Length: 337
Image (cartoon, rainbow, N blue to C red):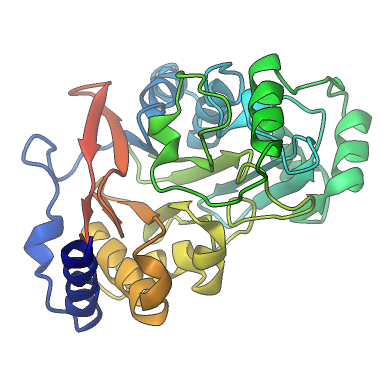
């Protein structure tokens, strides 16, 4: 263990000094550099989300329609304990959901800590299109959703409730890196300190972009905790002039750096999506070196040419890519260690 600690410390120090080469984060050889249209998303369960989004684009739908349709897939998946109706609850046993959606023209909407609504991504879109606001939270978000005709449901599944009751026996809170994949569909009550996110980005043949982000947040969180996913500029940011970015992992660390906005602005300055993701991750590591060895943050980016980038603090972050060449591609993101 001592050797491993020294290795992690050395790796983080090297990253903080900027000594890791850009080549370490190069896109997989199987992924063509540019493709429009293209859909990308976080984690293994992003494959199904991408395919749903791709169907919309193939039928002539907008990229905004596409990302909403894609995000609704994991929200409805009973095997997904980090997004939607099967998500793990907070420490009080209440399932609260967060989501945001953004068009490349700057229109955006979000909901946070909403309960009893199966598809928060669709409520977020209604916030964008039907109100002068960007973000509604808690009871106000629920009230708005009901006024818009969304059905009120009891979303906490038996598996998620069982996992919560097992957790209560010790009530230990320690999020684990990459639990999105480790717990997906495995149903292991009590051993999953699960968090977080489906982030999805799409670009059409004309270079128009949109993005969506949806989550049940960290399992066993304090009631009322909100992470980066519904915060425009943190968990999601999209700009038709440049590209889009989304994040996954410990949302507090992403909020501290306005992470997705940072990635897009780095692309605006001339970085490739890969270079922008790497620089954003390294900034977090430099500022949070002591904590970084125990947490995961990853960024996924797509520019208006269809180029993709992804990078994370730790190994294990996966991302899915869908385009005309292949609709179920899945890649391991490069990382600082």
